[in-house]
Length: 384
Image 1 (cartoon, rainbow, N blue to C red):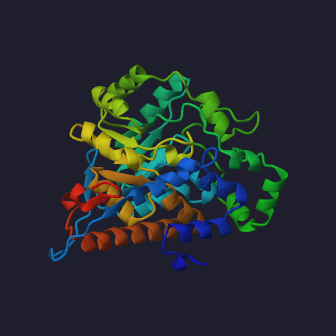
Image 2 (cartoon, rainbow, N blue to C red):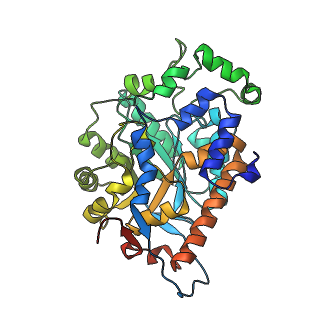
Image 3 (cartoon, rainbow, N blue to C red):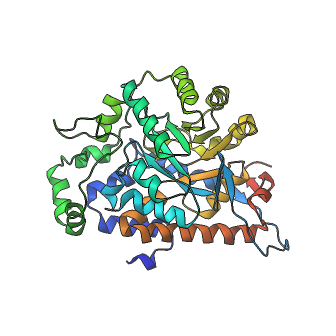
């Protein structure tokens, strides 16, 4: 299979699986425990059907949205994800460039492999910083200040990861940073030599947001250990309120899943929330964001921008989320598989296909703009 033969999410996943060593593919592909929540995230969109309207004169389609003060040309953005240069040597640069080409937002993680400053200097489309709250408060302040100096538009604090999820695929392969693999894991790298060649012939892997603050010289830092040992499980609403005050700009909480927490986010001055279960990678058995979307929009959607991620694979998924009141949606794996498979051209193809799907589906729905999408476009099965 080649990139030109990829037409959807599953095609990109198949190509990435063929090209990546198994430990790295499974880091992207895997989720917590039995992966029930991971599978539910996408299945949740099948609980309702789209109701198209015809003969609406849809000569042009405007799919642009404004979320947390950022104008996006399409209603899906590239959610911040960790370790991108492990998947492809261009990493965040490839994602940022592709997102800029399509006029949408992208994010850099605290575990990003390119510095916030470098990315901000190269690309001018809206940028999110996915922030993890560390036990070291000095580190938190330094990282926030770096984001301000870089010119990041949106601070996105991840609140569902005060400890690591039980990602058993990583345990089986020994996936860690730096690599400390099992024998089976090492064998997988041996049979996928192209990845290794690219890894050693490009700039040394680094975590620029953390390198000045985290000593990894004593051995491998597994992702689970990072979450469990470095992040602060005592983080509370007062801590976040202080961060919101210090940032003094667009501030979003990623990982909100209850009406109660959504209301608290409004109370402390957040400008956005992302309904998310971390792509099923944290608490297995937790609810799917799409299932919680309507009630949270009803509770706070008039006061704060409500976004959702987790499970997005199709343009119709995006239209369903927008119809329930989401201002935009984020996606991770939808661009990570094509990034791993083909770098920037892969991400561009994924975004291009998604844009084409959204435009085509909006025409078929009889909607000329996102503003014309509403709950009247949906019918939930089993509800009269």
